[in-house]
Each structure stands twice: as structure tokens, then as C-alpha cells.
Amino acid sequence: MAAAWEASVASEAGSQDDDLAASWEAETADDAGGSGIPGIGAQTSERILNQDEIDNLLGFTMEEETNVKRNGVRALINSSLVSYERLPMLEVVFDRLVRLMTTSLRNFTSDNVEVNLDSMQSMRFGDYLNSISLPAILSVFRAKQLDNFGLLTVDSNLIYSIVDVLLGGRRGTLAMRVEGRPYTTIERVLVTRLVEVILADAKKAFDPLTEVDFELDRIETNPRFAAIAQPANAGILVKLRIEMEDRGGRLELMLPYATLEPIRKLLLQNFMGEKFGRDNIWEGHLATELWSAPATLKVVLAEFQESLGRMKNLQVGDTLIMNATPEAKAQLMCGDIHLTHGQVGRIGHNVAMRVEAPITNSAKRRVLESR
Image 1 (tube, helix red, strand yellow):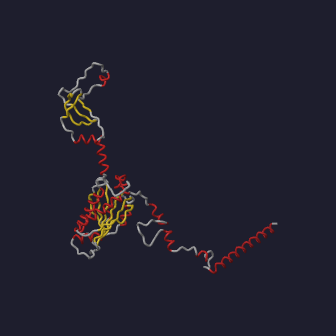
Image 2 (cartoon, one colour):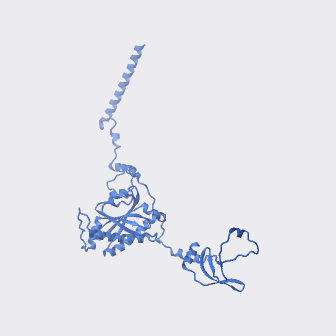
Image 3 (cartoon, helix red, strand yellow):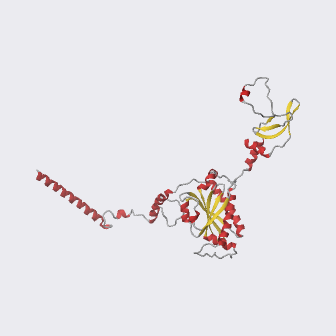
């Protein structure tokens, strides 16, 4: 019985091996017209992706732009970047800055200057420092009311263009650019004056929203010495393009989110219409309603201190002696605010008070604030 069972098992194994070999030979023969390799034939050749599909899958393109929306594998790579909320009013502030800079730089250079806003985006501070193309001048400025810093970067093309314009360079000639040397004292001074003009315009651009004084702190040429925030911290990067006929360059303004945090609620406001800042109609209505608001006045002849025990035991007929004399002036009060003083008298059947001193401006202001 054992010998018969071994013989049957051996015959079944042999038949299975023959079937596998036959099927393998059949598949090889079918693919002979294709690549000659099993599993890669005419049908699989249709699955090969073209270059556009590969670029779309990976998220890389030959023409890389910062404003292009990422997708594919590139989106996964950049997923560590935090998506920050949009600040509508900040866009209005920088649009106003562009208009102010156009006028200020025309007066500064006595030339036809055109300022354009290229882009405004969120970016990590460390990535921005690594993306700065050198040589460049980095101006670190301080926002006094916000108690933080910002960064203003002037590229080499704009530096040489400003130097050429301010020192009387002829029009129609490109600014001479010398590589491999640090910026001279004259070039740094001229760029410092340019930065001061831009910071003054930035203050005016923020004035309708809030009062911010921008003061130049220092000038740097090495990005490592211009670190005003942690590399992982994010900020708003604004790129401006300044053109002076056939000359010009780029200007970049970096404001960390920590700098804008004190005025974040103001920047989140939605901007509607053309009016920006004060509303004269609302101010007039508020002033009219404020002056017609009722106020309670008190005439106080004297004030004195007494123990709580005696006040509790007061009876009818008890006499309280005040510190005031018959000639003492009565005080006119509005709540706890002293307005003026005068003499108490009688007109007909009514007790009256004659005002003997004007109401001070500080008292008026305190009353309006209390209302």
C-alpha cells in the first residue's frame, strides 16, 4: 500500500509540472511579438506615461514659479508649510504703499519712477534667507508700536541703479556692476537714504489703520546677521519692482507674523469700497448724538467722614456738623468728576447755583469718556 501511494503522488506531481511548463511556454510565445519578456507586451506599452503626465504626478515643471499651486508629490513635500489666514486689510496697506512710493521716489531721484507690486505670499523666514540672491543689502528696521522687527532687502540691480541715478548717470546706459567687492561707503549711504524714504512711506500707509513708526536699526550684507526671527517662523513676503525707465531692480519686504500679531484683528477686517480710514459721516452723527446725551449733575456743598456706628444709630433730631462755612463754594459734579464750583443761592422758590469758574478741558474729556 505504501509503494502504491508513493507512485500515485509522483505521477500527480509530474503532471502538474508539465502543465506549468506548458503554460509558461504559451505566454512566452504570445509575447514574442512584443518585448520578448513575459508580462511586457503590446498591451503594457499603452500604460507608459508621457512627460506631461509624469510632471503632473510629481508636481515639478520646467518653468518653476512661486505663485503656481503645488500638486502631486511636490505638494506632499511642501505639506510642512502651514497655510496662514488671509489678511485683507494688509493688501490695501501695501497698495497704498505702492502709490506713496511712486510719488516719493520720483521726488527722491528726480526721475520717472514706476513701482509695481509683484506678489505677496506667506513664507518661512529661514527659507527666505536662503533664497536671497547675493550680493544685496539687507536693512533691519524696528516697528516701535508693534515692538518687533522687519526686513527690507534691496537687490544689487536696484542698488547700482539708484547710485547711478543719484550721482548723475546718463540715461540710456545700463548701470555698471562690479562683482567680487563689498559695497562702498557712498553706496551704503545712498541706499540708506532710499530705505529711510520707503520706511516713511510705510508709516503713512499704516496710518489710516494704526500708528506705527518704522525706524532703521542697521544695515547688513550677510543674511546670517539679519536674523530677526526663528527659521521656522513664518512671515509675509512682499515683492516690489521699481523701474526707472531702462534701469531698476527689486525690493523685498519681510514682515514676520509676530510683528503683525498686535494688529491682527485690524488686518482681518474686510475692505469694502474706496474709502479707507476715517468716516466723516459717522463722526458727525456720533458727535451730534453725543452732545444731546443726558447727563446727571450734582451740587455738593460739603463732604465729611463719619463712623459707620454713628451713622447706624442716627435718630430724628440729631445734628451733623459739616466742615463747610456759610461762605463755602459748592462743587458741581457729574458722577465722580469735578466740573466747576460756584455760590449757592435762591431764585424765587428754587435753590440755585451761580457758576464762578469755567469747566476745564480735562473735565470735559473725562465726562465724554465716561459717557
